[in-house]
Length: 135
Image 1: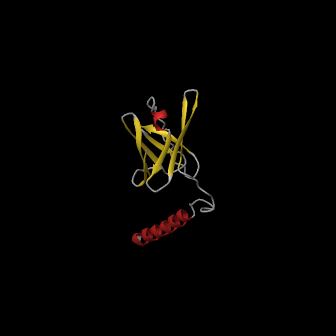
Image 2 (image 1 turned 90 degrees about the vertical axis):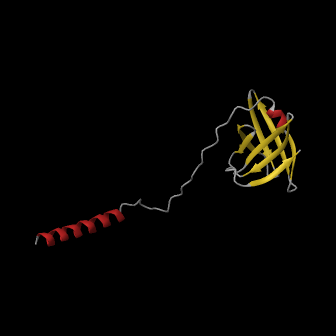
């Protein structure tokens, strides 16, 4: 008798728990828009003269042209990269590496004899190279 009573109570409890859990979801789920914003890269101190050395025109291997320009406002240095789709601000993250703001692109400027000769353009995670530029 006690076993039947315990089984009946357990079945009632399980039914109640399942129905409560099903109705516990957020109201109107799927009707609201969620925007995920990634963390912006932390800017790093740019080495002296790198700003001037990297400015200019780079011919990409796929026929496009990369123009790197900059703007000085007091001590603040802003760098822009344009591959034909309009200038995009790029932020220095260290050792000649830059990340484009609001784009999935990374730039790595490689110097030889105090002159930037090569720019490697890849996805932001660095897994896929998009282009190589030579001066």
